[in-house]
Image (cartoon, rainbow, N blue to C red; front, side):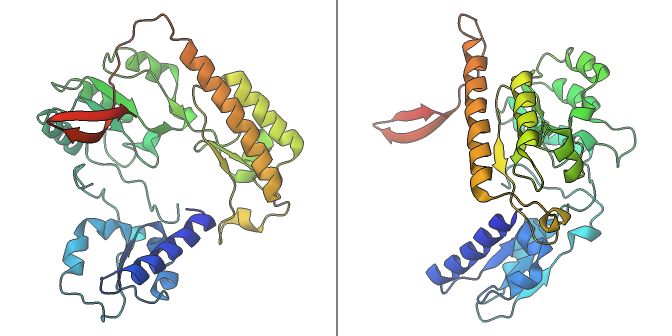
Length: 306
């Protein structure tokens, strides 16, 4: 979460209290995890939960009243095990890598296929690290075994670090008929100098305006992205976050420059997406169409594609 996200979260909390003066206000998430003292200082907050306790929010709320003092529960930094949350219960705040047990994943998929679900997306904060904390487990093993479950027709992956994609992975994935051949590879910048300043090899999407990013650095990034020809591009402007090394770096980029660079990359992304989509003209493709229901009249559903 960025400083902008923190500020918006605090504003939301205050607005919720103003609009619901008789409600019990519970705050859960990254802000509550990393800055509980700031949340506790907001008038009208009754409960602050660490992210590992969110599944038990009803238990903690039971018996609370709006006159109760703020209570803080949970510390994700001490959590060692994966939190067992089912789908229909719909690095400061993340803690250590914790992988969900493979058997739990298979049981979840079986339960959902029995209810008619056919497409599954495997996702996580560091998806490529799945299994590093388990014995004899890996992401590709998980994918292959999910594909064997009756009813599974499509398997997708969330964002991946590029370092996991090697020939062995590709060869094994090529044999999984239900795997959708598309990767969201983490990048963050196409400029080596910027990546060094970020102190990370790869993470997610494209960030412009990182401290010290020169016009030449941005040009390198732009040319790299253009040369790769991504099917889709997500662009974000760097936002300093309190407490991080980057927030104290020299060479903070002016907001207008960030916006200009962002707009330029977004335009490139739109052009690449159009180029990618037009490549399918004239081809036969099997697709799952997703619709959003707008209304229902006389038993007839009306919706739109999403």
